[in-house]
Length: 453
Image (tube, rainbow, N blue to C red; front, side):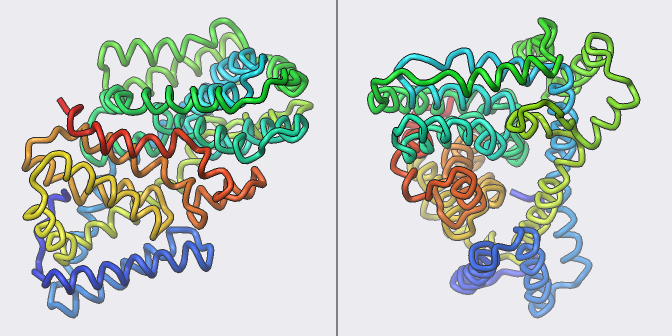
């Protein structure tokens, strides 16, 4: 929980009602008005400040609570900045192109849906962004499915499942970094721990997609177009694997995430400069503004035009606002009163984990924002996990299992609206086939209490 002492002790019913007002406000702006989440959160901050002043909390205390709340996310902010650098440096070193190219080599045979799921998962891990993966590789696979006259709904379910597997397991993912930072768990320890539920969910999904796959052999033309364009960038080299090897070695030797990402970024940058002969002046500009691809194949241009510090500012600003919002929820006593009621009722490990998952899912459904789902749930339950002796990594795992992967299943959520638009498949059509996203929270609620040591 935020290291903030409440300056007011509202009644439970008052806290719940005011919290529902705030949630309704945020939901209305995001769902109905399609506003960026920053706006309703900022309006929520104004409401909380007004509430605090009405309850005779000094503005100094209110401001300190807001600032202290934002301060708890500074670790995530610095990681996000470095992730922007890492993505751009991995592109110009050829690491991301070679990973994507390798993924396409697995396309073939008759297990079309299973292959779509597996390749999208590999690309998702390499990119660390579910939405980018969906909007690039996902669009290509939807086109292939349409040409083959196979189910677009199942194909979209496979794409979403693979993309959000990557979003959970990639050290480049902002939600993965956020979940680990919010509860104070090392990034790679977090990734290792979520594999306990993520790998079984992956296996279940892969088997189901293999069973549902059509018998026809797929056309390799689309994959070949991608591979030719990737080769045409001139960025693919055997040394392009080195930044990934560095990340793996840093994980094995348990080097802190910030240092690991920094070392890998420097390694990738040296490869870009000395192997691919990219001008050093351009490299530093790419560190900030990201890489812009210019191949003759537009889908690959969209795939590789990304990264840079500037690309992370949307997420960083949202994190700062949301954590400041969370700080106000604590200093006004709203969350502490609700948390106290939960603590009195939740004592068993399984009930705590189920309640955590239900809260994360509920915020996704009512607010439609996965960052808020991770942040608010994490801050609410952190002290409760400490009280009953549950490790923090159990909380960060549950946040990912029930927070990150549920957002694309909500039709009015940020991810749901985006994915339905780019794939041309309604959320409710692909939802029954997003097996990985459906299995993750179920597995964590059934087996989570047995896997926290």
